Image (cartoon, rainbow, N blue to C red; front, side):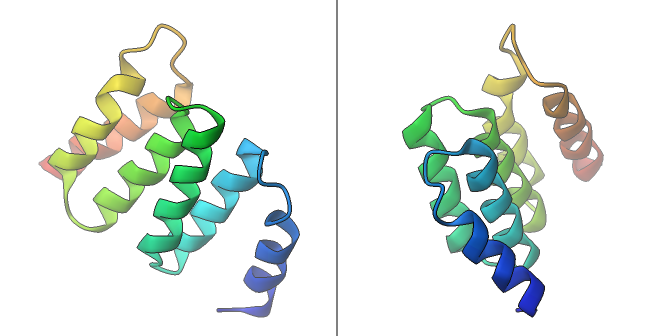
Length: 101
């Protein structure tokens, strides 16, 4: 892992109740194909909010990286169906649909 990535992780790690920090750590893990680390970050986000969309986004991205577009779509469905869905959910849905083709 690069020194910059390591420094970023060390900076974000002390903020366990920050959803943004947890999501960044998960993204960093996925960037290094560390699916276990990304899963831990998603679990931490679910401790903040069991329905946190960032947790779903990490899980969806991990599924897409593992060539499991159908699984990604299924994980994303509850987030997309929410009335207060984040715009990023629609982008994720488009990515899962493209991966299924």
